[in-house]
Image (cartoon, rainbow, N blue to C red):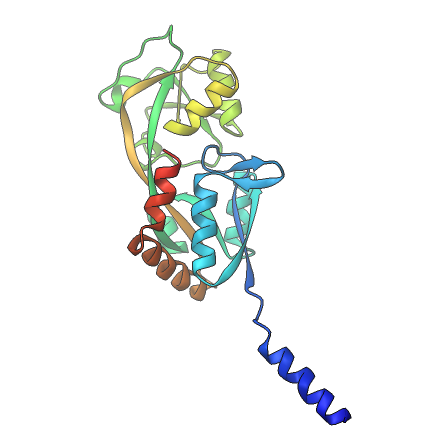
Length: 238
């Protein structure tokens, strides 16, 4: 009798579905509309895409917002399974597995409405103080132009738009949607300067020590594209 009970218990355990492994995915702590905290949980366009990707890869997402410098440190040390939203850059493709792109955004310059600035080439912005966020990259053309006066004093987008409003800088640079969001939140008027600096593909970065994660995420991304799930998420956030 005891043997029968033991056999039944073992069969029940074997029949129970295995719990999906949890993946720790880090991202910038406050980058709306792409990721932000809403009623205690991480929400936003990119957060929704990453959750769908990780679940399609057969794992449970644990999205952990952190300051951007901390995101880079955790990824560098291989202390997380993946991180987003990384701009493609040669050194990053060497250091990490770069999965994607999973979406594309626009990098733009912005100024105060009363401070009209026009530009066609970066040379037109020489002499202006350009506000940037510490640790962010804006593309090789901008990042490597030593003739530009950058003020890398902002820790996030909210501080960046306040720096512009306080006239600590003349121009700021960043993602179009994020700049617009924070300007509205801070009740500040912002003039987006045309044309955009760049169309920017965004990637998921995976430590080189976790090739299986990169392979599964790449397969999941291809699957979400094929069945229309990725496009449906993007449309929902337009």
